[in-house]
Each structure stands twice: as structure tokens, then as C-alpha cells.
Image (cartoon, rainbow, N blue to C red; front, side, top):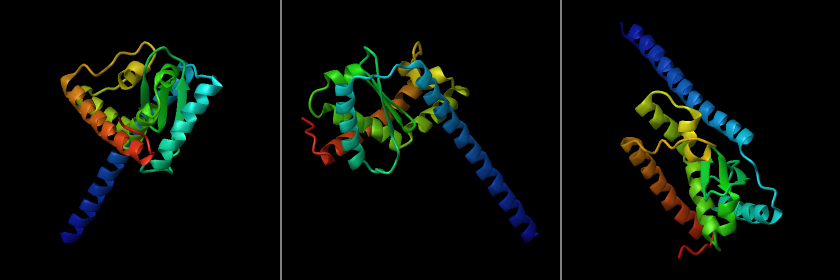
Length: 185
């Protein structure tokens, strides 16, 4: 009897592990699809001056973040919006934001987005949207970064969840900025 229970438990643990891995893969697949969708829909800046400033700040943040070996991918997007977003390990920032941020502000914005990427907040966000809605579209997931997309931040439970992620990223950004020698004041 004891052997049968052990075999059953082993089978159950393997089944549970397979189910969890499948869910993680499903969520990672959505994040990957989101990046592919953005790659096709967005226009990327070719302004050498802005790109240089952007990539210099990105390298500074990556050098001090908790997982400096993560291959973050930074995108400078042409848009009149003042926006930054992380989708998996891809970080999107609008050229308008980079153009208008002063001094060390860009370090803190990028630190905020790197924190999201490091902590897999995209996956957490997908899981929470799925928990609340049972189905997630790319427009739901991407919110305002998706051209013509609507924001899912209207739901109270989801709004609180996202605000928690944002607060953590704000704290992480402050930590990274200070490590990088940026002035938070």
C-alpha cells in the first residue's frame, strides 16, 4: 500500500509540475507574441543623438541592476507620447520621453523598467489578468503601448495589483539610480 501511495504521489507531483510548466510557457508565449506584435506595429527612432543618450543610460542601469547578465533589449520608439513600458525582457521608451527628461531622470525611468523586467512583472501581470478575466488579449496585456489598445487598468482589483508592481519598480528604480550615482532629487 505504501509503495502505491508513493507511486501515486510521484505521478501527481509530475502532473502538477507539467501543468505549472505549461502555464508558465503559455504566459511566456503571450509575452513573446506581444513583443513580436510591437516589433511590427511600432516605428523605431533613428535619431543618433537620442539613441546614444538612450543606450548610454541603459548601459549604466544594466551595470548596476541585480541581474546584470540578463540580456535586456532596449527600444527607442517614435511617438509623441511620454511613455516607457517593459514587456518581458524588452524595454520600450518613446523618443519624446528621452528628449524631454533632464539629467539623471532617464536613469530612474530605465531603472524602473529594468526592475519590471528583472522581476518578470509581465508574466505576473498576465497571470493576474487571466485570474480576473480568464482570457487575455494582446491589447489587454499591452494597454497603452499597443497602437489603438485600451488600458486594462480600469478594474479595481487589477488596478491595485498593478499599482503594487509599480510601487516596487519605483523603489527598485531609486535603488538602481543611486547605485549608478544618479541624483534622485
